Image 1 (cartoon, helix red, strand yellow):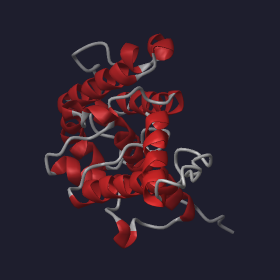
Image 2 (cartoon, rainbow, N blue to C red):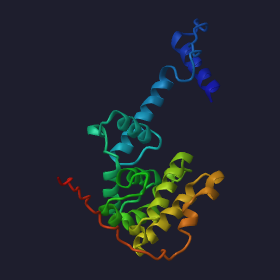
Image 3 (cartoon, one colour):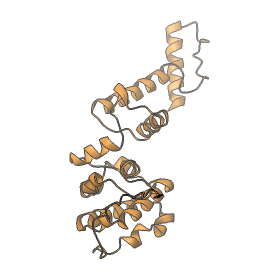
Image 4 (cartoon, helix red, strand yellow):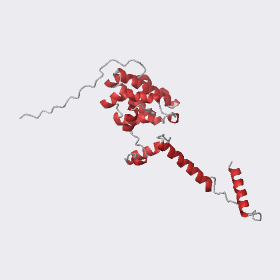
Length: 225
């Protein structure tokens, strides 16, 4: 296609120069992104990004890069686009929107931490989050997770399943849904190593308390004379 385009451009240049100026040629040696073709591609790309932004359509890779850069700089989304963080993705889930596994990882890191010690508010939201993950995003984000992300989600879900709140029937069922969705998008080479597949294998939660033990205040006794 490039060769045909170059030929057509050369013919147009010769026609513009008159019958006696056949030696005039357009130099297209700078590459296929030079000149008008480069401008057309840039306009098409800018138009596509503007369309997605206007219709609130997520842009693969670009949104991830922007979110990571903003997180590293400690800034929010600002006026250039919607804020994409743990709180907004949780609000979206509660509003009935679908959620990707990478968004789940944002929430787990924010509200639970590496030890799976989630806030009580997040425990109450876990069934809703699981439904959002189950509905899934568009097909563009159904790609395999990076191994590091899959491992982090697996570790935190496993810790959550070991907590008393995880034994609540609704939460246990929700954790099993998340584990299944995680398995579906985990790279094949590490599927068998996922701990959630073993810990959450049973449909019935293990016996035990479903509420955390109340924290006891440490009593400091002064030395008596």
